[in-house]
Length: 120
Length: 493
Image 1: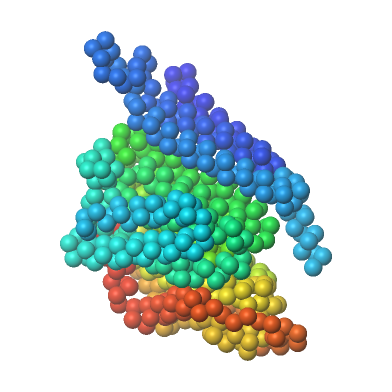
Image 2: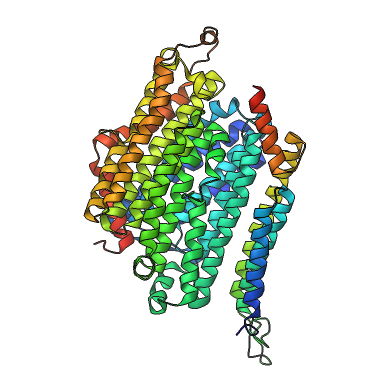
């Protein structure tokens, strides 16, 4: 059961690692790395769903009869694009945060805001 | 022509976005956004009237027949939300130019309109589509553009707020993606109607139960349902005023609509509210939301933050309505979706005018507002009364419908919570009114206040006015909400 469904276990473990990194770190870049691990876990889940042992790419040819399912792969292509866009936007925000606060750490930025609020 | 409206509705704002970027001019970008939103609003109205007379519309994108191609399906439920979202988009278009001139760097204004176009595309797409994976794609289009919109805020806190929203929103979106993937794994289809047909045979299947859980939690994050609301208050408070009007009125409502569609149109009420104890869970979460949101709003010292926390509470009412899973509960939820969108949109518009006139939205700075800006004060008062749910406002109509639905379901504890949270709303609205009406203005301030630009006043009065009209002549709105609920429950004639 565990051995034959190892693809699901890999997805679950990666998912948890990603989520843990997002929650446990206050460094914004580490948060984005965690977010990427989290998303990649889902990509793996989808891609492994469509894979059939011994299956080839879905090209119609007399020599092959077993094909992997292409639809989950195409869906994940879309999700990867979304993931890339999210990471790009996230990194752009980190650059702006660094310009405005002089740090990429979320907690330090919050402390800076609190100090500023106390001064005024 | 009507036959192609379901896709044009989504495609026009999508095409408008790159045009805004290419033309690189703030003025041209505004015209493009205005035209796109007016076109979307017009087609939403046409679609709604066509659905009301001829029944649901089906559209196969690219003429690929469903379930292989992507289908767009318009029925009474999503026509209702389409009209609401595109209507708010038009109000935002009227409101935006003068407001953002004061808040955004002039060289970035055209990008702001491009993001608004994309956000509108995403929201309309989520609502119009009949394909589960399409929902995820549009969800991320609308979310990504709203992160960018929020990051354009004037203060540096906007960047942090946008980043936190990005992290939470991406987690939510990915959860939805997992849920859709699991549902696809057990059925082999992504078409909503097809899924709905194949899923009942699988009730009790553990993969399917996990799918319901992932989709529900993901959309709850996007809808800022308590206790997953942490991103909302600072995001809406720090966003540029004109983006705050649009996002606060539409963003969370569309996520709630998506949950309704998944729960009733795909998984089926039998699974979500029958096999799984979702109804009890939603009632608990919704009750906690309306109490906590309203209570925390009482302790804020910034007008926009009070409004944002009050949104967390008001989402609780909508969630409780849909948790009942009855005809009355659902139509109360639809009524409150529209009532709250109009009232909160109007109030954020008012807060934007306050920000423009006073240069700040801190509560202390509102002192003497009733004298220096009586019209703004009256709008604030009328909107606030709507939040409390005073008779003759739209807030009363929806709360009344909600309480009736709760009485019918014998949920007396929830009714007590609704009343308590209305009292708390009285407290936080009362605080704003008290400062603005009774407190003496600082001596220096009242000389240099700029007057309210006419387009901003028009948008503010438009939103507040429609919410008042809907409170007095409640029949058309409640008829539409009832039809929307019937369409979701599958009991439409």
